[in-house]
Length: 179
Image (cartoon, rainbow, N blue to C red):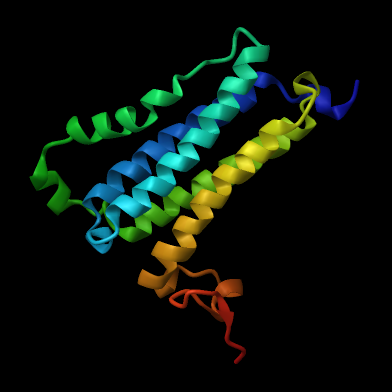
């Protein structure tokens, strides 16, 4: 029995569900993060696009396997917006640090880890056969990385990983500034 047969579809499904939950959390926290007041909708659009790719991946797998969860893609943004409507305690917003850019960055890092794990599992899961799922996950990860590079790193330099610290994120093109 090969190692690829050991990756169950339930692991992939669980990763996709966790990614969607974290995307909802990021979408929600962006709405109340003071660092994103001017660009809130642009940032949220990246989250929605990433969510769409994840749901397309999930639904593509669900077409092949009846026990896999199917999600209606037209409800992605509505579902994200509903999470905002259910939260209306403004005193809680002001008193907690959950709406700080550091928290958003931590959730985005967790999303990237889960997407990477899910892509590896999809690639080596014998039951899935062809591999369009990895491409969909890569497109979702691209959206999330654009969010980091265009909106988080220019605002908060201390969140930039060491290997990216010589890049200028505020210019139209990334420029490497050698020390």
